[in-house]
Length: 226
Length: 178
Image 1 (cartoon, rainbow over the protein chains, first blue to last red):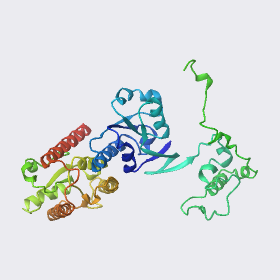
Image 2: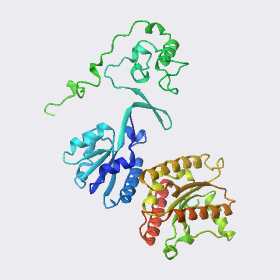
Image 3: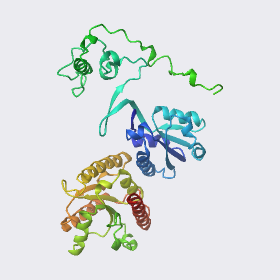
Image 4: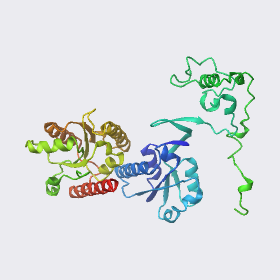
């Protein structure tokens, strides 16, 4: 899932303080699960923002809250659309995709982000999320025993660890596990160490973060004219 | 079954008592310890500042950050969260979770520019009536030093807000009990 965390209250306050009526919009999907932008967090931020605005003499700004099931899909924004006209600004507590989906849907309303979108990751333990996937568009997990050298090696090395791997830890941060130690250990336990012997091919980065926004198209699913 | 949440009846008609800008404190009290301790403090005829309003919870583990912020938003000057001694929670770790949530609420208060000292969690047992009186006195003195909350409307309005908050909490918990 997409993992995010909230911005500082003051930063959000400063972005909305010059408006009269602001709607905070939460998202009921990924950011609810990572406790950043769901219904409960929206209630907390709503209270915090109203108090913060009052403390800088902008108590007249109306701050209302609502949460929709999913911000990144236009069909789910339908429920919100009739009410959006009552506000002169929206603050989205969805991921970056959610913020932009709302901005596209409401072209005349400023939409501000309430969260910092971080990464694609998993819940490691209660309250801790870890990055697992860099979304490079060219998955090679099969070559590396199911552990991604792009997301989990600090130097994105494809052909074994660097000299900074010490007792399973990375030289970049002492608490960071060495991605290549993890790859080696897992390949060993799977009996697939031989798969690590060939030199890994140069990664095709053209599928990654360049060339503008990427698109996935399924022709068989498309409907003519939409 | 005992009432899940209640605004302590003796405090219900205190509108006139709080008009001299005394700080108003909302105390979220666990039914099994702090609430009983407050009761005991009364039985022992202990004196403590009368500006505390008690909101009973089944456990401090019921507290959420938004309950605390809602209280400050409605203008209370300080909030006490009072739970069982550590290791003595009837629900095992409700009071430990409450402490973490109180800490988060304090961080948010600091971010918005309200003194985090206005919020404090205390641990006590049901046998500590004297401790309850001490806690309220300590918070009262601290809030007198800090002055009234800058978010405070007129005193009567704060009382109404606090009562409304208690009604909402009661309704929410009654809904959950069904």
